[in-house]
Length: 177
Figure (cartoon, rainbow, N blue to C red):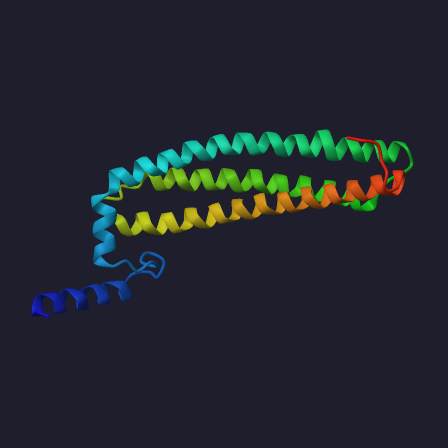
């Protein structure tokens, strides 16, 4: 390794130690930095495409979650209460679904804000900051993914509870759907 390269490495090491820890929290190789900088416009186009697809998915999922919460869970729970057949399990599932649905909405809004910030960063000139923001966006997307998974689990549990209730009311032989 030549003297100039060793000097650059020492300079970068000193600079990294002297800087606040959150600025260079991500360690990138020179190759990764070069890839981010040289492919910046392509990366941004892909991110904008992801943003469009996610927006469509959010509308679709939001409509489904709204229908499950209001048309299925709430209506069933109201009907059960009206007929003096209230089920604590079904009521708890409705409440948890509504709570997680609100979290999903907040998670999505936070994710979209962070994605907008990512797209606004000039990745050609500032690959470190771009990559740090990308990692933050990934974490927000994971949060959103958790909400989606949890909503699916609650809906599956609710379906099983409804099937159990039907069997309790009608026995194993209940009317066709």
